[in-house]
Length: 142
Ligand SMILES: [Zn+2]
Image 1 (spheres, rainbow, N blue to C red):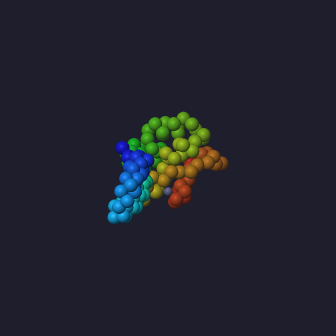
Image 2: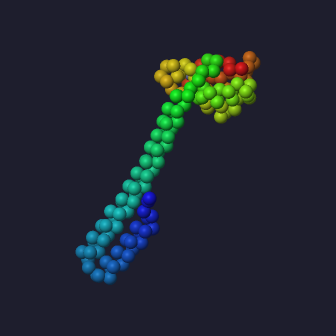
Image 3: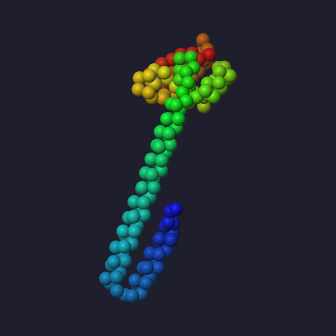
């Protein structure tokens, strides 16, 4: 649980008032230094929090990726995220949504360095065609 900065500020405010009352120059200088240090710490804390959030997001993505790999199934020439998605793709015919496309992966990129690259798709002259935005692999899925 994060300490609210308002509490820190009010504690500093109370300390500053007490120091001012004491009319002690040495105490006053020490108080000002302490305020500066605390405000640097709060700023560092903000940076760390931001970095921590980014790392958590990256970790979540890595877990998602791992999850996808363990459930991968083949459909025609391409890789699909899981069995349920494959059934969905089979049932929608050539009405493949963008959501489905993000779960359809390039077999060439996966074979080369096990990267999961989502395919792009469109209705072509000979059925629904998917292409890889990275290596330009292309095939028909309907
Ligand atoms: Zn590719």
